[in-house]
Image (cartoon, rainbow, N blue to C red; front, side, top):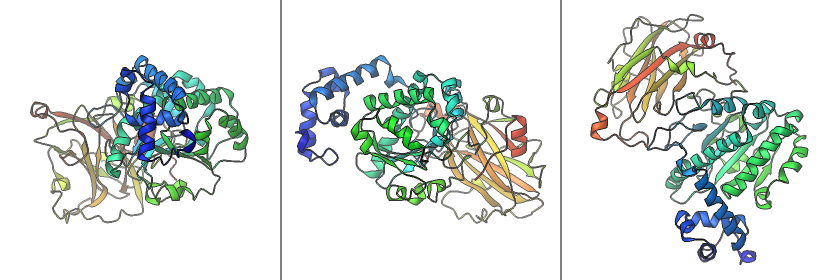
Amino acid sequence: MGASVDVDNPTRAQWAAAIEQLRDKLSDEVNSYCSDLDVWRFSVARQLDTEKAAVMINAWYEWRKQANVDELAVAQPDNENPVPCAVRGYGAVADANVTAGIGVDDAQLRLTRTLGGGCWHKRDRDGRPVYIERAGRHIIKDIPKTSSTSGLVEFHVLLQEFLTRTLLPECSQLAEQTVWQQVVVIDLAGVSLVALSHIPALNMLREMLVRDQMLYPERMYRTYVVNAPPVFVTAWKMIRSWLDPRVISKIRILGKDHAELLDQIPAHNLPSFLGGSCKCSHMPGGCVPSVPLGNYPDLPRSAYAHLRHQVLISYTEPRHSFVCETMPVSNGPTPMSSPLMGYAGWLGIKRDSPRSSAPTSPVPMRTQHVFVRFSTDRGRGMVVEVLWQPLGSDSDDGILVYPEALFEPQRAPVLLELEAPNRAGQLVVNWRVANFDEGQAPFPRPEEAQIPIQLEYSVDTEDELLTAFSLPPIKRS
């Protein structure tokens, strides 16, 4: 059967026959645990050889049970678990970076600081999730120092479970068909020969790749390795020896000319540094935040432990606003003696009403950067909007410097970066509880809706934030 089946385009009969043949080799326990898609993936991974596929899927099942993989704290719409890496452009979870929340342990934070930056960034032309990794920015020599091989594998398992349980179901719903694979883009810009020949790190990579092929077969549709320097050829000869032939057939090695990416991913979903038009300017670090690259502030856990302001809001009184004065050049925003509690500001306008009082005038070219840190102890998400008004203006008109966006600070603290005019004025930061039609988190039961939500936040200029936590300047491209 295997020789005559195109496993990338099987007929319904071929699909069904392959699944039936493999299920006949499995116990009732394993069969009840596996979906037809699981059975198909393992069958394809072993070229439709049912004996080999049965051995593989039984080992996978035993591993999942022994390692309690189904109990992992994976971020999903119906829980408050933090995301395992940066996310952009999905509905199951709001856009987020990894921050030092209660559910994020120090080992993961240390690993994040050595990795070049990874992000699930929107979808390809067929609705598949796209994962982008700035591997060329990895601090290779520090990875074995900050994480064990088992720790790196566990982190990778968490990423794969997030993909499987959270992103793929959403992508399937949007595409109105089963989406079960992802597209991976590995950006090697900045990689060195020393990094590509670092044996301890390569050993960790080998273990991760071997585990990935055994435990998550056929989850990858295509991998693009872009900005690959000539020296990568030597490393690739070694790496490909660890991969199954079918996996190798799905990998495209590209140099600096990677226009081929646009055939797979639409420009508006592809970061500008990869030839697309997306910048994700609403998030610190843009499309793919990177600690080694320094494109966003890597705040320590203490930065979120004691935020300056605390206020209680609720589903019946869902709004809160904070006003601070902005001063030109170095002084930056100076918080007022107290926030305007209960002030609805421009956010009080109904969503279906004309926004005449909040014109989306372009922000002046001379701007200053302001950071907002905030978290909540519960809830289903907060919508944030920020406006600026010239000091002394009698008009209610303001400049919209940050349009409404949904975040989920109940998962982990949120850090926002704003660009305000470098002039004397007032900055108004508005929060409100997410409406029924915003986000996918379930709405609370009546008794839960009676419990107030504690919002904690701080607002600082860039200089204030970087000085307070002894951080280097941010490198914006």
